[in-house]
Length: 209
Ligand code: PRP
Ligand code: URA
Image (cartoon, rainbow, N blue to C red; front, side, top):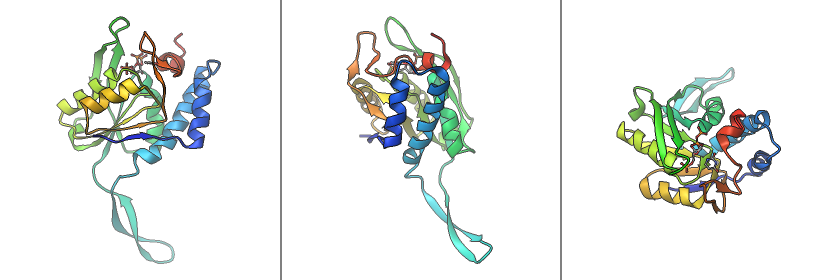
């Protein structure tokens, strides 16, 4: 079973509370999501392997460390996942970025794909899938399935707010994928929105409602 991590550092909890507040507008919402993503980025990259290499400082020669292993790809699920890309690129500036466009059908809540553009060497990369909301889990699970169909074997999922239903679905469909979230909320409502959640992440991010 993939590991499930709630990254609840006080700074993250504080910033997330402001994001949840219905009075917070798109400008602050975007800024806070980027800041939280950077903070979560420390944890999601914690197990990246290191290798030794030689550095000559102004004082002496030393054995220093650098990140080794697979290169990284960041794959946001459109639209709301876009709000997490810049935060991750701040930490991993050489990462490539793929995009998967999915929306939830308003009646069935099933995810529908409308776009998929990935780096050509995606199967050789460690992939961070990002989407602030893990509700039913349909969107994230579908995105991960698409990546696996392209040959990707190393995938982690970065979310902001998760519902128990979504965590269960991803863990069942993709037991090899670790999930990182800032909060595990109570439940879904009858429209499959997370309660208490923060509303529609895409609309709040881009001011479309
Ligand atoms: C939201 C959110 C996730 C999805 C989560 O996107 O950003 O992608 O819903 O729900 P699920 O876990 O039940 O699949 P939405 O479909 O509203 O599209 P948008 O980002 O374009 O607004
Ligand atoms: N998508 C959102 O943006 N918010 C939810 O609460 C559920 C799905």
